[in-house]
Length: 417
Image: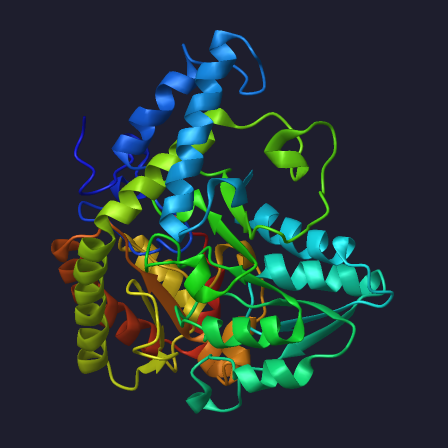
């Protein structure tokens, strides 16, 4: 078996394209599949192709693999096997949690509380429920640069109403990396008798998770954020909590999510969860050291750099920096041409002409938000890649800042390679 010390996608690895020394620093968008994960999945794409719902031996082999994966996922977050619902990814898990909790509530009027920095899988779900007559309160995360992108639990408490059925707050923000005070918010929800959902898509596999310590009733994860395959995730549903299904057509996942199980994907999720749990402490220490080295060096070498978000309460792999005077899109394109892959925000918002809603909510000006880049590291990241990034980024920032406004606009319009 290939060592899983670094996950690598071989010929399809994004780091293998372009210049001689490409550097991929967009692991919050997605990660390559670990070779051990791929090895675990392959038999279920070929000889072990049975339907996990079938009673014959081929089906039972598939069922055993799904059960083993469920055990690994449950162990990653401290849950029971019966509390894990497999989904097509984090977005479906978020949707199932939100729509499912609202539909299961018997309150005549319904109200949801969330925050201004949530992923669009949350915010767009809340917008749709608002169109259906559900009241939604979006709690801010403070004003000014000192807000750090962290919500005040007391603001959540003040937003509660008698008709509140759900609070949904992410664990780690996908753009800033900031970790929210989930345990405090969970206690507020429990005291009010309100369901609490936590989107842990960006924290699972990066920091230790224990659903009982966190106090979440519902929690979402996605495999491709920690070296698993795309198209598979899971929703934790605490025992005794009820959610209405969003799909119909069978009794899979204890009647909570109909449809034939994606056995290869689920096996991959299970193996990725197993590796993440095994390598968590080592990965966290190594990745945070490289992240801090990159961040500190860029701040030293580049004048007028702003660090966005809290520098301590964040996942170990994420750094979000503003480079005033250099547009984020122009920087992104120029860095890509030099083989440095990063992002200006969430991959799901790619193509938007508006500044990041997360950065604006965290107190950044429009100009600072537009000049921001997110660098996110992963298990495959090496010190030599960080060396390369530290060499290239200051030169690119200086060059973009030196361009006239018209030239910067032209650079932004250039197609990426």
